[in-house]
Image 1 (cartoon, rainbow, N blue to C red):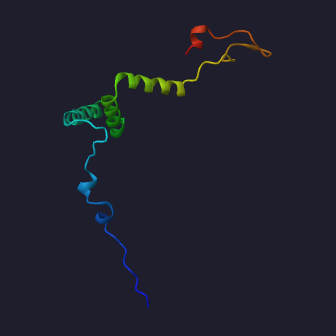
Image 2: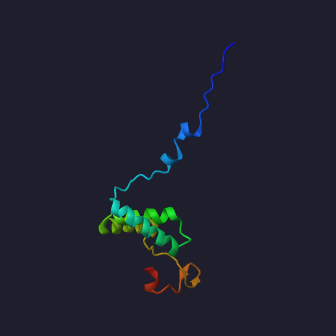
Image 3: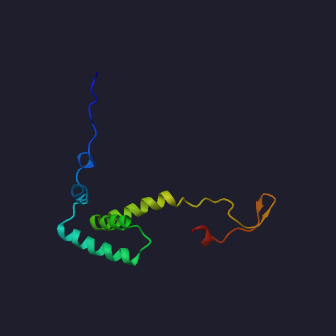
Length: 112
């Protein structure tokens, strides 16, 4: 008869020890001083904004710390272009009589 080989492994063998998994990797390339400041400021932000997830706060802090002002403005501009389509002159309200618009929105409302 053929013997069955036991291929089961423990969790530590499969994934490493808990201390190894919890070790923080500096993926943003920050200095020790920046990491210490990040830890303190993220804790303060978590207290100020308890409804925002901690991982999101950490990511945004690290992004703002490592990017230049011009890079951040470019990211915001690109996001605005994707999410806010240009205004198209089409029927957006007013009184309709047949298929003709009798009353249209004021110009300042069209630019929003």
